Length: 302
Image 1 (cartoon, one colour):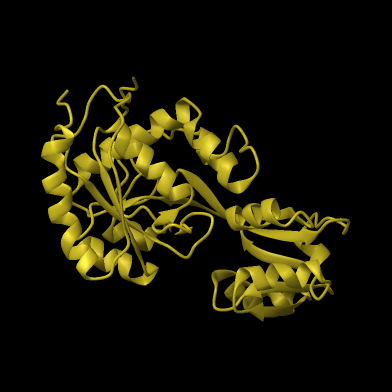
Image 2 (cartoon, rainbow, N blue to C red; image 1 turned 120 degrees about the vertical axis):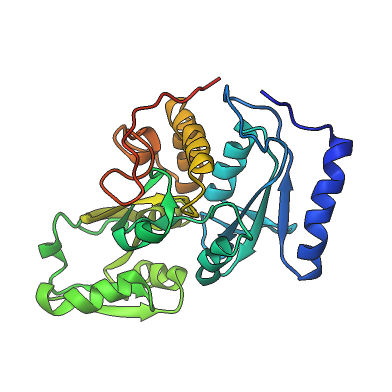
């Protein structure tokens, strides 16, 4: 396995990469590798992996007080890069611009959580899921739990305006007999529950868990299981080798408990044994979707 170049040799490479980004006002985080845990590293070992996140999506990626970004996805892919023996650069950008920038060659992959759908899998190449994303309700501590969707009849549900959860509420409120309130941010929707203006907030499971870890009066509650999907890292369709290398690292991190530990750190609860954080999936990619390679493989974990 090729070793990373000495710091003195890496510095010009990273500086050359950083200068145009800094001139454009883009937040850049550079992390040097501390070692590797895979028996095989990419041919481009030592060259920075270029990626980006939506830096406003806590707890997956959000600003640090001293500059840069932090969060689950930043930690996750910094560790992936370390195991591949490569530095990593993480830009903070608008989510809507990430896929166009990836396709333009600006990034090697996207570190922001991206829901894998059949439509997206037709044009992008995905790793297996490292998290499941599901719609989940959060309720005020002491409220009767929601055991089925029938329990929200006559209740008021708070959602983030313009989100997928807002769209779900619009599509299902009449059928299920609930009313809903929209808020400009998810924290505002959570506060509506805490203050009693709404019975429950509907959001993504990781966001609900994170909000509950910061606001003890909020309790994660009923999950709409049929909304479950993989959150995974997308690559360009021609980056099969790099996709496979990153997936191998993710599988090793699932096996040794690293992904589960990061999940507990950022989302405030221990993932179940059958959650994606603990499940290395067969083949490469998301089973059953375009771009999936069912060929059996054994990642080389150190």
